[in-house]
Length: 475
Image (cartoon, rainbow, N blue to C red):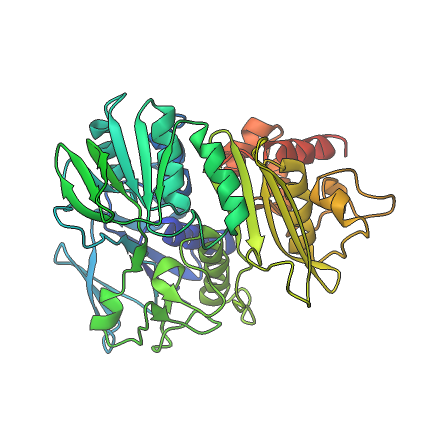
């Protein structure tokens, strides 16, 4: 029986992970003949780590997800620097911008999202106005951000703050302009945002909050809508993204802000799936890699026939700010207040020490948390959240990261963790994946990092990976 032809349109983090997952289930290509089409000329890379590239703590080649011999090792037909232009659903054929076509039995759209440029007078992409989204954007930013020069970052969300921290670490005078009353309003409450702002100010980053950009003059800077001025030789734009849906729209698929998919990640055409930032599923949150990678696993199960019952039921969001000198984790319910009668809400605020903790408990389970400068608590509470483990009665001990009461499950003991427990959230590396890599010969932390990319994101999981390595060595 000949293999099915599966085409992945998009070679970003979602498309590359799907390709890997397909080959993990079908290593010899007996079930799937795989074609991957990507508009960028680079090998797939980890966008999560781009702020480290801007900061100069990682070289561009380090963030690659695939090496040059990946196609030959996997038998995949990889077409880099080639974009899909249209889909002929009747013929099951994808047309590419180099004039070629590729036929499919199953097509997966992993086209991602495009940065949104706010309608500000004079603000046009160019050498001194760069949207922070791709590896090429990093190169443009580094070329334009002369050391000591003033830089304005438009957007106080996750990616904007990571860019601001990286540029400040390189010696730039950075000002973040954000129209909302506080930064990271999607993930943080007002008090935690205030503490984080203070922490970032300690790194030399300035903030203009609750005010928008009105006009940009190249070589001068930004005029804000309150009449004030922010000097800037470079504008880094991080004001959100819009799902890339043109292929889907032109093909007549259902699109409502993103490509609408069901729990099998199928579009309105059952032979076409969509995953990642271009897809819209009620249980997924845009802008985070974890949903894309969980979706990739489901589609890989389905197209290889490995697990026909596989379904995507949604992702519980866990956000980490990947910026040097900052340890921030936000998960689940973060804006629930103490006045909510259906929840237990504990908070701890230490603005002078730049620490903040918030724990939300419902029916004795963690349903939300914000943890800034509390890495031990973040590790423990994330495991309670992921595993649905009952929270010990001493909630304050949990919130502050103290030793758990006797008899409580220890989230730091590898022996107690299931194989599905996520150790490295930046790269979605589970305990089971680390064990698999260890058995394959990666018998120390650097080798595990090379095999799985665990620890190569924000670095917050390095101790946990080391703990797994020590536990395995003792077996």
